[in-house]
Length: 180
Image (cartoon, rainbow, N blue to C red; front, side, top):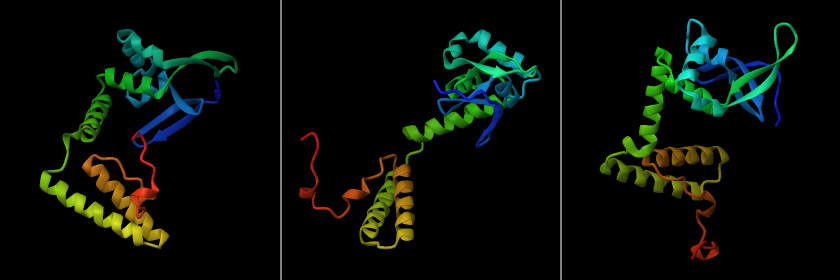
């Protein structure tokens, strides 16, 4: 296991954590960092209370040796992003509640809760076909990137995978059909 014993701050989107250690390239947060982000009056104690009520979260933690203020190495428990998310989901703090709503909206969107109407879907599919046709004949790298971005966005709106653009313009006989 590759672990950095150096505590560093970490930011991603609206999440800013004061104490993170990278374990195998993945940021793991301390209880203090999680509690500060959730705005507990006593950050470490607030997270400890969540963990006491929800011991299953501990399986998303690992112990690492970190240099303490006194210069000695101490075992410190740090939490994988899944553990951090579970602490947030179990917390009653206002910031945690806002995060839960954002996560629910994300899940709703990507599970089909905000699918376009049939009329919009037909329009989006027509736009997708035009963008794919334009991509086939486009020779400008900049324009190709713009068209690929449009294709990705339309596919995201339709809730379908992005087509394999390497197949555009190829005769079906040129491509091996897998599984047939």
